[in-house]
Amino acid sequence: MRTTTCIFLALYTALASCTTYRPVIISVKNKNGFAITDASVQVSPMYFFNPTDDNFLVVGPYDILEPFPAKGVFGITDNNGEVALDIVKGNPSSLIVLAPNHQRWRGEISITAQDTVEVIPPVIDRGDLLITVE
Image (cartoon, rainbow, N blue to C red; front, side, top):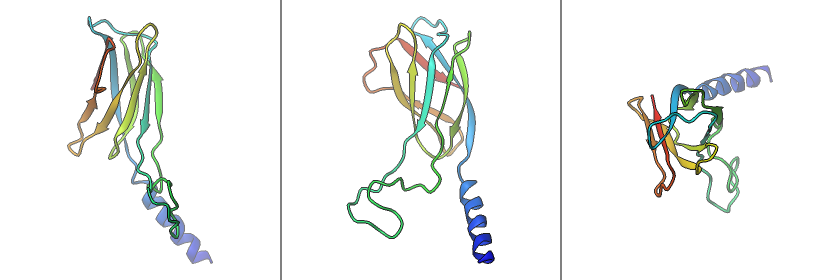
């Protein structure tokens, strides 16, 4: 019994360490280049689900296929229109920006294999927010 517990803990530690994060500074400005303060910036990992209707040994229908899902984060932009957030590596994430007196901005953010940050803007962007990352 004790050996089983040790093996489980070792496996858990190895798998849990697979989720890594990278600090990213997200900048929110309007189309004229002015910083937007007090904007809420939310990052939520996008998960891959089991699409089957059959129950398997461990994973059932519509269960998340990742054993240790990444955490989402949010923050509020400062006077420079910036917020620092830890973005998960290896998974695309949804990026939502809610700013007072502006339309909601919703796109995607991900860390590439080359360790660069990529932001994919909305397909149809009728808002006046510019989102950049460092």
